[in-house]
Image (cartoon, rainbow, N blue to C red):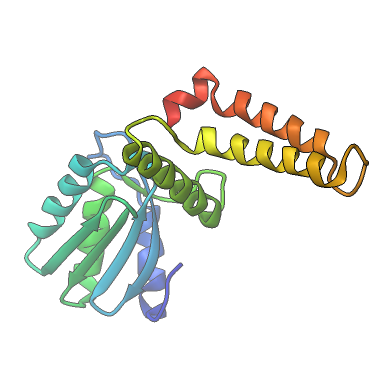
Length: 190
């Protein structure tokens, strides 16, 4: 979303719509987060957040004479480009990005940014648990264990009564989530 500089909007749209014939790399999906006088902020899609790729983009942009600074953050996919604020500089930056294979689209690829952020947070938390315990325990084990403990507690407190959340439902969720979280396809993703 463009903010604070609507005068550049028409020119930006025109530049972004032009196809670049120099692009040789696979398209890098990005989203313009903000554009203010002298500053452009992009978010790179999670699929393209590789240190080498983001450094390649930063080096090409820094080679431009009117670009003063380019900062990247691989974890968040953020690329911040500071420039002299001239319209021609912004056009050159956008053209360079297009030539590098950058496309401007929805970077969440079907999910909302909040869902992607939540997914990323849980994956990072899982990695921390894995490292902290030397690979002995992770969230794929702790979550079903927690549901199992709730199921046992429910049986001990309520007996076999079928109340709001019966013990067998919690037991089923514990068993089902353990199987799903520890399947071979999920193990490769974490």
